[in-house]
Every structure is written in structure tokens, then in C-alpha cells.
View 1 (tube, helix red, strand yellow):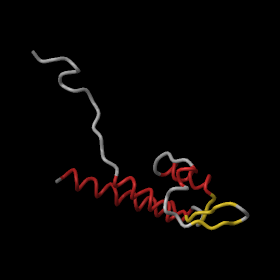
View 2 (cartoon, rainbow, N blue to C red):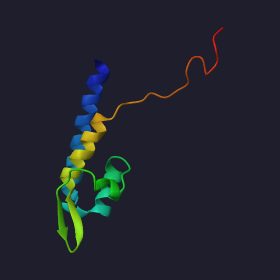
View 3 (cartoon, helix red, strand yellow):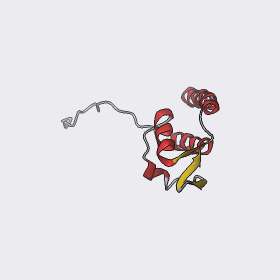
View 4 (tube, rainbow, N blue to C red):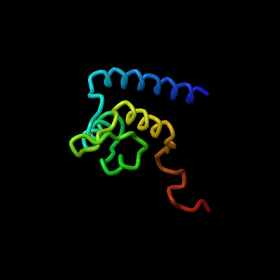
Length: 98
């Protein structure tokens, strides 16, 4: 229960930080710039990957420009849906307990 609460609090704090960052960012950005912004604020992503995301694109000067807030919302959604994986060594370390 407490882990779930901490995850919710961390998500809310991240959302507030992103909202503050969004006020200083452009409203729209070309695909390579958008990929750089998402990589800086969330996780590594390539411009080619963004082609498959459901972002509304405007073509300006023959370049696809996406809405930064929309892209950040999708990135946050993908981050929230990601399955956490715990690392570390197993008790047996690959040996048989016999």
C-alpha cells in the first residue's frame, strides 16, 4: 500500500515539475527537437520512434512539428504503464541447492 502511495506522490511531483518546465518550452517543436526534449525530461527516445506515437503533427516548412505538451503527456503515460523490474542477485546464484 505504501509503495503504491509513494508511486502516486512521485508521479504528482513529476507532473508539477513538468508543468513548470513546459512554461519555458516552445508550444510546438520539430520531431528531432521533440525527441531531444523527451530524452532530457523523461527517457531516451529517437525521432523515428515519435513517428509511431499518436501525436498531432503539423507540417511547417516541410518539417513535422508536434505539440510538446501532448508528447510529454504520452511520455508520462508510457512511464506510468512501464513494469518495474527489480534487479539484484538471486539466492541461488545459478547453483543447485542439493
